[in-house]
Image 1 (tube, rainbow, N blue to C red):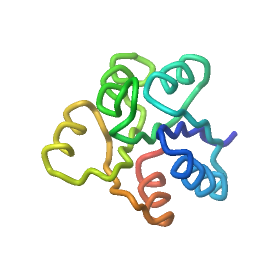
Image 2 (cartoon, rainbow, N blue to C red):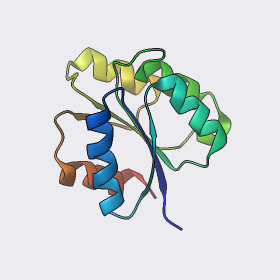
Image 3 (cartoon, rainbow, N blue to C red):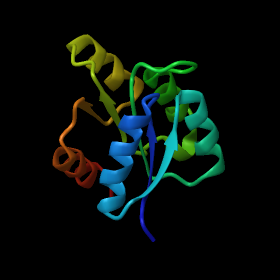
Image 4 (cartoon, one colour):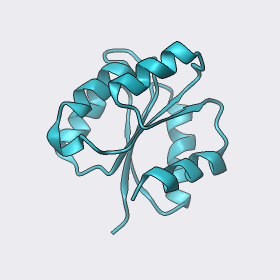
Length: 121
């Protein structure tokens, strides 16, 4: 059974690129348009990993991570921030919220897959 990765981004093109990369590598992919949509999908599906943008409407990436980490079944799930933000204070905020890793857009598909292989057991 392949691992399920939920990708969360308000940009359809970014979601498509991430999904394509992950599906080519053999992962099952769910897509969400913002943090609130992601929470709904997490409730309805068994997810092994989360890849989220930072800046989104309704619920941003930091808020999403905090809510996900509050759920006992997702306490140790790998969560990667995939965002255009690269400031150290934003990274620190993400880490404090519970992000496992941080990748700056535009991303390199090989880099994304290498990070996933490293954190997803």
